[in-house]
Image 1 (tube, rainbow, N blue to C red):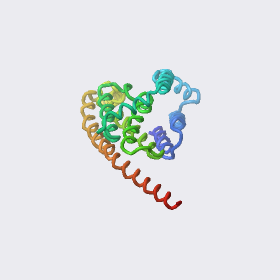
Image 2 (cartoon, rainbow, N blue to C red):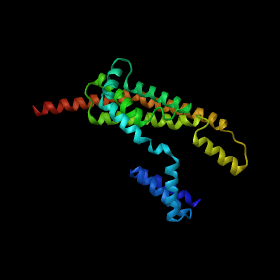
Image 3 (cartoon, rainbow, N blue to C red):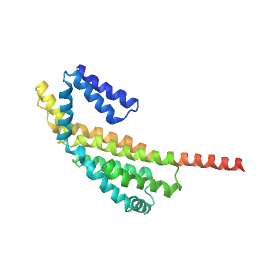
Image 4 (cartoon, helix red, strand yellow):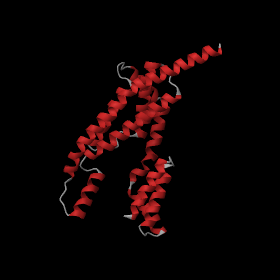
Length: 236
């Protein structure tokens, strides 16, 4: 059980806001040493893990494609599109994105959406465009808040949606470990069915937070406008 101290390294690293890649790397090395591996075997384990997971290098294709699309006006087109839907506010749009992300992950389409291919080039400009249509020019602080909520919609949708899919790695890992260790006969379908109530609760809770975002933005921008007006009057 001492090798589980590597998890503590991850928790401390994330709590202190260290570089995620550095935290995970240090935790892996620390766990390997606790497990009795030599430095050569730890390095070999990192190499085998990188080579066996081809998805790690998918950014080499994704980033240039997204860069070219943005150069030719992808974000501007996204803002133009959201302007056509007058009743689709920032919170409503992100709640809709959360639902689509969760449904896609539940049927195994985990790579259809994502931060690089969807959130940055499409979801964020559309969410910001909806806020600009309602409130005008946005301050940088407000833009960062909208971007963080857009990223959270993708994270929550993927995390709680993918466990509903039978063939996801976490489901297969749990069933394999439990059946081998305890001699039971746990089927992936059993875990997937139990994941449905959790996914629904996650959608309701985070969807409610996203819908509240509209009121938060309205209050913050109103307060910022009042302060700006007061400051301008004081200067005069």
